[in-house]
Length: 252
Image (cartoon, rainbow, N blue to C red; front, top):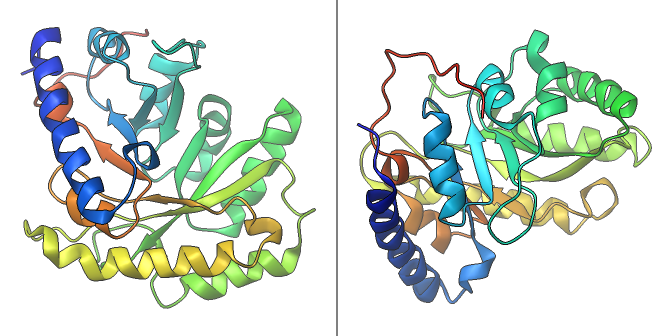
């Protein structure tokens, strides 16, 4: 069931209290953690309510749904432009549409995808933020770069130099915590991701802007923040339960 605006406000306050406490424990500022509202399977009205509550960044799993909600430029409460994050795996035939609608794609895991995105972004005269997904929990059901191959993959991008993908800005890494129901079980994979991100940020060059870590959701955000997450992805705790039986086809 979708939350009303007042319910969303109450749940946001509770979530912010958790984020604040996690930042305090980690010795970090609240401003160092971006809240990405995961609006997948939630309708236009819910997005409008979120914007009214100050949301600036939204995450969508499916490109088609991102197009319906975020193709038209939208202004956040603070006057900034609302940003669309595509956080789910993108099929090859959807990369063009993803490049057009998204401000940031969190789930890239191949050179082929980068090459297609570069071509589209060059034609659009657009610079797109890219995060590379790593299957840090080594779970068969999760997408992303294999944990043992991720460093080599990133090294191969460094070897190509700064002119290979001039319309793509490599911003960092993304992972999904372990699906055990125990937040602490994800600490090791979050720490692995942080160490990998820090190593390549220090290299500069194509990784000069590699300062982002997208990790942590409702159940494990405290551990993620303690391990350096700069973006947490939260949906149900803010919007209410999703109704997967209804396709979301009402453009905002």
